[in-house]
Image (cartoon, rainbow over all chains, first blue to last red; front, side, top):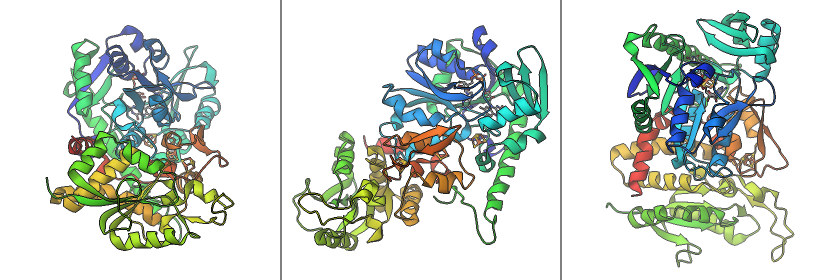
Length: 291
Length: 253
Ligand SMILES: Cc1cc2nc3c(=O)[nH]c(=O)nc-3n(C[C@H](O)[C@H](O)[C@H](O)COP(=O)(O)OP(=O)(O)OC[C@H]3O[C@@H](n4cnc5c(N)ncnc54)[C@H](O)[C@@H]3O)c2cc1C
Ligand code: SF4
Ligand code: SF4
Ligand code: SF4
């Protein structure tokens, strides 16, 4: 295992001790539980989460400043929520001094670039109090999800209870108990193109990052990465927010996370290289080289 | 403390908002002036009439080519300064002055405003309107480390400044359209929202996760593209965000 998992101080398998959160959460309820604790303790005064948008299963960035608001947002919506778009407004219109934000690895990259190179983010850099990253293999445009659920899985979006990607399949759970699984072969072509040059699987730049991979059903794998993350995580453990198990003692464990991370990075690195000779002596842009 | 670097603020056709942004660093600015930089030129700040030799020139505003003095001063700036930094949208890209077409009282014939890079070579860009105080601060600290720091610090400063130098090489035109041309059209957009957050006039919204620019509102400041993680993303620097933030905070103590 090398750089594919990023720097971290601690890795455990964990789940929330709050039954209500576990019922609503995608996996171990790490994101919602940690934000709830941080809100209650005054570590953050609001969190940019993915709230319900205008259409079923369409997210939109939403600033939760109370636990009640936060509790409307657990669960994964597999389509784009431009989380970072509210990062300056959070400190202005909402007047937050300590901002929480959850997002995909690329959104964590955007947050950190924004702190080091704040071109249009006045007075934001020192107000990011807790950045929680989720693992991410790929994301989808809303219309892709609509097409996958309605055309391929044959379900109405509004009657879907949960969607999940895991064990090599895209799962759609209906309100009446029906379950449809699509092979990822089918979903690949619908992915957001920008994801194909993404070189981060486990939110290497978050304070705390989490995902389902590596841990048993209902549990999450958690990386604690920064000083801030470490401080908040240990306080939350002290307050009894989480049940934890050493990652070495769960199946399939860290090796599975490493394997998927390496697969993603290798595949996308290849795409980056192919873009350099995409046309006839004409390259597509490579953001990792220059603007 | 080792010797200081010399810095000047060169005021072209700008609204002084960039200077105010620099000053918005408050105690941070005082620390910079106390420990790292001597201000050797500045219209309102230092009593010097002619552009002196200096390490770093912070240029604010675009250049009116009908104004002989401005043209002469910007050329002189290039001769006298080791490093020329275009501070703010007007100096980098023309920004709001792109829409100038003369007729204003006092000098109605002043109608053509060019980004600094159209007349002289510019080394570093700090886009945005107004430019962000914290980015100006970071560039000042890095410029100091580049010129006076230890070997390791010089390496870091070089890496940090590289994308801002590449932005300067990239050209003198910016627009919200860059998000289409150079990000979405290139298959790179990830729907993160940074562009919308960065836009000073709220010209950008997201439609199904992708940026939609209200082109009538765009003032051409260049903040959106420069903020986008898919314009540049330098792993070697951003991955070290914790250590670099500590370093900058430490320097300003
Ligand atoms: C596009 C996408 C792809 C993913 N791919 C993987 C993967 O390959 N492997 C893996 O292990 N995990 C993946 N995850 C993460 C996983 O699905 C869970 O989100 C994560 O484990 C957190 O679960 P939880 O129970 O701790 O959080 P919960 O308490 O359920 O909270 C989930 C949080 O995620 C936020 N959220 C929901 N949708 C989005 C979105 N579209 N963008 C940003 N934030 C959102 C919500 O606001 C909420 O705060 C992916 C998530 C997304 C959004
Ligand atoms: S795969 Fe990468 S670019 Fe795509 S949403 Fe996930 S983190 Fe972002
Ligand atoms: S869209 Fe906004 S941020 Fe982008 S160049 Fe125009 S004014 Fe600046
Ligand atoms: S800032 Fe994010 S949303 Fe905007 S163009 Fe760049 S990648 Fe797309």
